[in-house]
Image 1 (tube, each protein chain N blue to C red):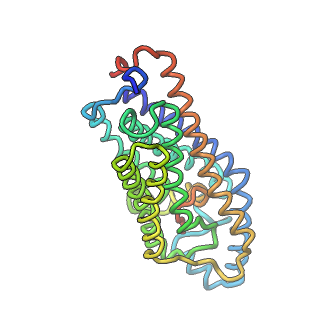
Image 2 (cartoon, rainbow over the protein chains, first blue to last red):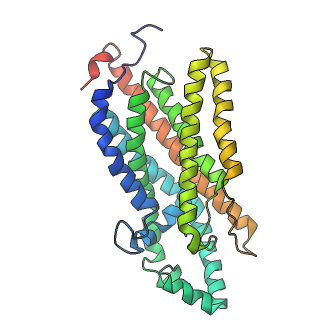
Image 3 (cartoon, rainbow over the protein chains, first blue to last red):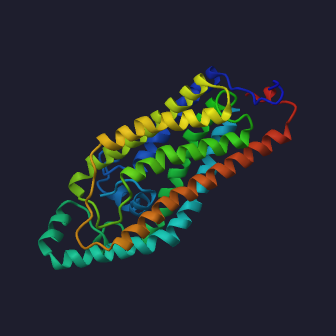
Length: 62
Length: 253
């Protein structure tokens, strides 16, 4: 395996600041898939709006 | 470089989410509608139960806080945002794996990672705790079931990590690596399968064929998402790599 054909490895220090995006992305996923008002404070509105998506993406809905 | 990958992950995820939403709309929504019709028929026959559900704040049909047509539009909102979030996380994992673990070619790595993610994070939890249509599942146990579902996702991720790490340490032969990885993957999976509680909340008399068709549509939606995502992400990655074949190392930003 020559170095030319190998893809460049991204140094971890370059990657680290981007890891801050992970909690934000997971929060979006949580609000879409699981929140029933505990975080969004909108009661069951998110649950109702995302209802069909939750069922068909396979997460427990109710 | 990382920014390029993250933007690619977000956009491809959004697009794949909308494609999966289209599949869910055509193949899943008729089953959701059928299940809600059954639920309402059962509630009408049993007024006390309907009242209890109203107090719990959850209802389908006419009196729901969000109407059925709006919920069908919400389907695309949900799958699109899900794709966006998952695509962003995937891009960061991919950025970490690239050149370290897995296939050397960008497109092949994207496909392998997407396929692995589908098996470990989607298919595995689905097989233990399959998706349920409306009218199936006790609202009282939603928190427990959600927690168990998340535990299965963690088990899947841990099993993949253990499988890849063990296989890489034990042998350099690719076929032997697959065999070792497969065997190591199954250890925590079978343990979790045997130890975690079974959930069976299908009400008596719920049509088995409708349940099967709904579950098929549900895992199909995820399959469409991960296939579309893996192929698009891989295709774009290979295209970018081909455009600048001589300067892969100079593309750090």
